[in-house]
Figure 1 (cartoon, rainbow, N blue to C red):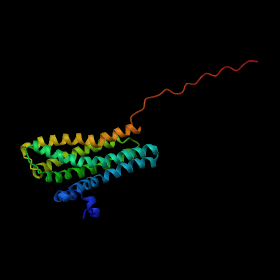
Figure 2: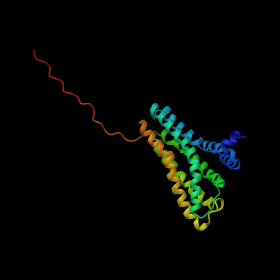
Figure 3: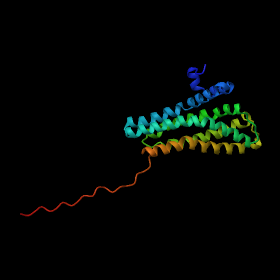
Figure 4: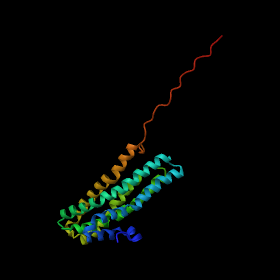
Length: 221
């Protein structure tokens, strides 16, 4: 059974593990696991912008466009980031002289992907305060990097077979690649899309006001 109700939605890591155990369905489970990881940030970004419009702190048309861009970037980013994270793990462990099997790399990637995407719930806060989406995205990438660093310290040595002498090199390479790819597939496209739609929060230049022409004197008859 592919979808198992709430358990599937709340435990995508288990879904990923089933994927690597069933090669004939691996692509389907890969997509499903990435989508479940994006549920909370997708809901947060939509609720934040639409809530801002309901509270009157943002114009409805601007909030709607920002919500659409945020939803697309979060869901699309998860679909791209899931396989990218697997490749990053393979590259990082190889550089640390550890031979991580591709099947195990997929399962290990979900260990990082689920908590990182869950932190995207912070996207709901800035719009409700009348700010743009950029502070939420900045907070998300900072929290994501901290989670990855903490997870590397806990998981790298045992779960991925990285020896202690190579642990620091592994963590530095993995965190740097993680941040670069995260910005490239999630934050960067969202910022570009908002700019193209004209709903970015960049300050507009001060334009001169309308010039008042002097009125002619009243005629003297």
